[in-house]
Length: 112
Length: 114
Image 1: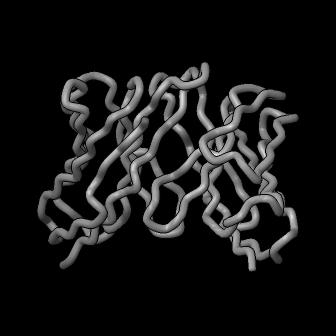
Image 2 (image 1 turned 90 degrees about the vertical axis):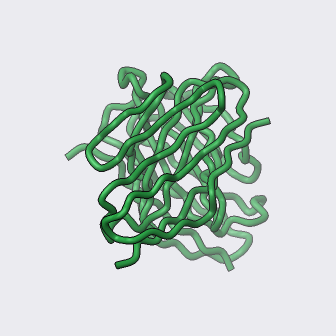
């Protein structure tokens, strides 16, 4: 089966650092994505990891360990606008096509 | 400006009626997808299409139908056979030329069936 786990909710303080974890058990692995989704809006792409290690992009970094089936998204210098849901998704090859399997998302609340 | 459009943003229907949600993209992407999102759950794949005139069932295709007659368009019909149609529906597209195969999402349609 396909399973992706993330914490349901997290809270953090403006200016702080927060780490959102994602563990996965999927049949096959062809990359891991992180998306940000504000309430009622479309998900927007944050990062993509296909090899082990850290990918840094401004205030956001994403880490992947394929052997452990584990990834995290690190958000630095938190701002109020970072309050959103963060979706972890794994790309798998199934039925002759690539597709994304999404976790349920982590709702992050940033407080002043 | 390239992007994906979905209309309408909010849609209300009576139980027993079929309804079609539109999705148009001008990104020249070959692949298009339909997802359903329910509160507290991740996005679940309904249907996807890799090329024109071809589409595949996703994980929760029952009660839905699609067509892909043009590269730019991938409409989704929610039929009366779908037992719980009220949800937020998201359309996405991607290109195999993009090394990350990133999926770009439309703004979504919130469907309410009463």
